[in-house]
Image 1 (cartoon, protein in one colour):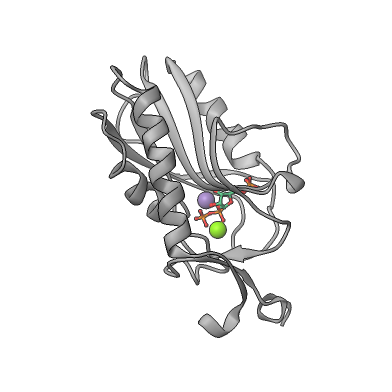
Image 2 (cartoon, helix red, strand yellow):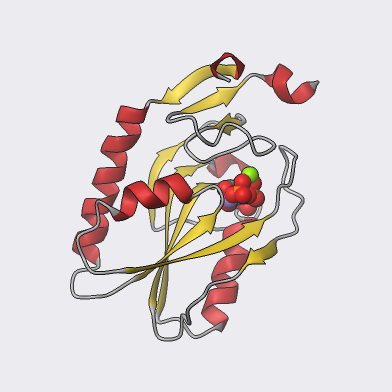
Length: 179
Ligand code: PRP
Ligand code: MN
Ligand code: MG
């Protein structure tokens, strides 16, 4: 698995520092509120679990699964809800946790869906951002790292469902997805 990685972009330690930084900011900004923190499955599951441990305000969590990629390195442009939330978002301060924003399609769709359900506020935190690939205008409220336009895996991010368990984020060797 490690052999399929061309270059490690951010180590487990570097990611840890950034996650704690984001958690501290969010803790300050959400002081006195009780956010509903939504994990966008599957990619955000590791970031979500690391992040919530660093947030000090009382919060609730829920999960939503959407997919636009399938077993491809390119977005199909079609976003599908595979698993919906268990709780109502009406009147809630919603914090969406994403692993990466690429075209922006997944999140712009999700924000739309949630706002139509009567949220009080919708805020986005993403660990990774690839602004070069944006096809819809979307700026995360909080972000960890800006990435180059390379196919990256690890720390939740997959290629054909693999590599999510790598503790770091790295560039996948092109020969892995070109064959
Ligand atoms: C990936 C990633 C983001 C989304 C970003 O999810 O985890 O959710 O794509 O791409 P976009 O900005 O172009 O929409 P994917 O659809 O691969 O599902 P997964 O999280 O289950 O891997
Ligand atoms: Mn995802
Ligand atoms: Mg994926």
